Image 1 (tube, rainbow, N blue to C red):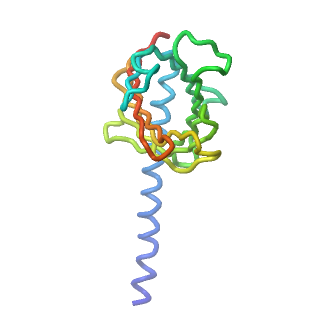
Image 2: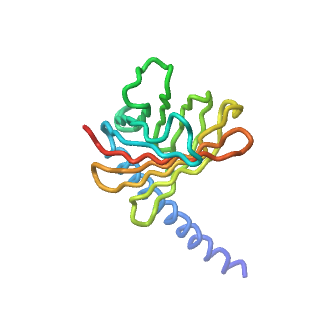
Image 3: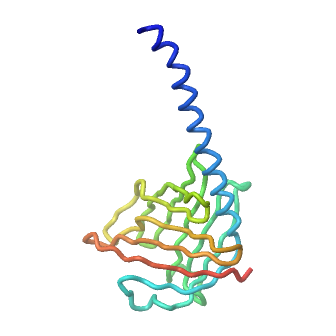
Length: 179
């Protein structure tokens, strides 16, 4: 019995190692897909339930790769608004943490939720699931996000906001590359 157990341990270790090795390329590949979105995007937003002042307003998303290729910065604001901190201007960072693709969202609600990615089999949909949060949740927080790549110049973003009292607001952004 002990001999069989000793013989099985290296096999179990190799199986575990190969699982980790398979996860890393998927996360790295997804990060590469996200970094390919670098540029300026313009589109509209639809919310559910409808949020006055947001629906059908033009939104601008700027994405840029920084930190020697280790971070993708995502900056979202209503198109045409000043960048003086008085309007929606959330910043989200995408980065690799060991073998996981992560995001941290610097929210205008004053908190910083972190999420971890999972990828669809075809690699065109990257879902970020809530992991944890820093800062208060008094004004709500972003709970999850989904990026769907349609082509090199068109993608959608679906963000779920958890309002106080655990009420969900979903926002769907349909974005097209302008630069």
